[in-house]
Amino acid sequence: MTVHSLTKGGAKSIANKAKAAAVPTERPPVDADTRIYQAIFDGVLNHRLTPGTKLPEPELCQLFGVGRAVVRRVLEKLAHDGIVALRPNKGAVIAEPTPEETGQIFEARRALERVLVEMAVARVTAADLRDLRRQLADEHDAMHRFDQPSWARLASGFHLRIAALARNPVLQRYLTELVSRCSLIVGLYEPPGHAPCEHDEHAAIVDCIEQRDAAGAIARMDAHLRELEQRIETSRMQGEKSLAQLLGL
Image 1: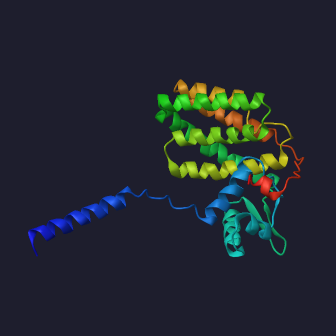
Image 2: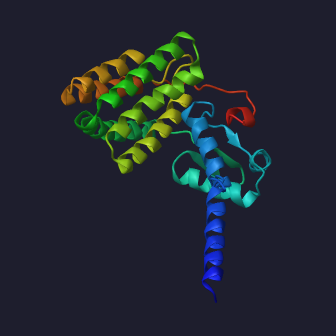
Image 3: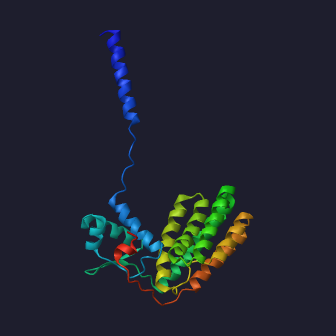
């Protein structure tokens, strides 16, 4: 083999590699399990799906273009996470927490958020504080627009944003589940027209975090969650929208 052929072959190899590198790499599509799980989870978190809402398998299959095996697998995972209740021979519904479960969930959430707030105070940055202030501004705007869905989403998002400041993904994941289960409780028991959280209470927590006042932030958060629990009533909010609307599709 000549030097020329080696050079030619090397150039061809380099050209092929360059051509391959020039082709943009497509992001892998989100799998069906994740899409269905996230749609139902977000529906609960944003109070579109209230406790007792039926989740018919045939309709879910049609909405997401999947088979029953996929839908059943997702529903089983949601049931394991406490979001869905599977009733023998009756199908799946969004879970309806009992008063006893309600107390246990709020107790666990208060304990977890105390830890997360303390960690957030120790690790918060100036950029984090700016993001928190923007979050409060968005809440204030949604409140004055009487935009209940946005209000609910931002209220839950505030607590998850505080959890993210703790820089502990394990604890953050646990809180995400508890916040979702609290959203179920609010959807079941809280009177219509109320925000899941009060804007002024969130603002007071941010003030304490900005002042690096861990004790104050913990006390404010604890009082805030107790106030939320005390507002719970036994009246249920009924929805009349289609499953597609409730899932935000």
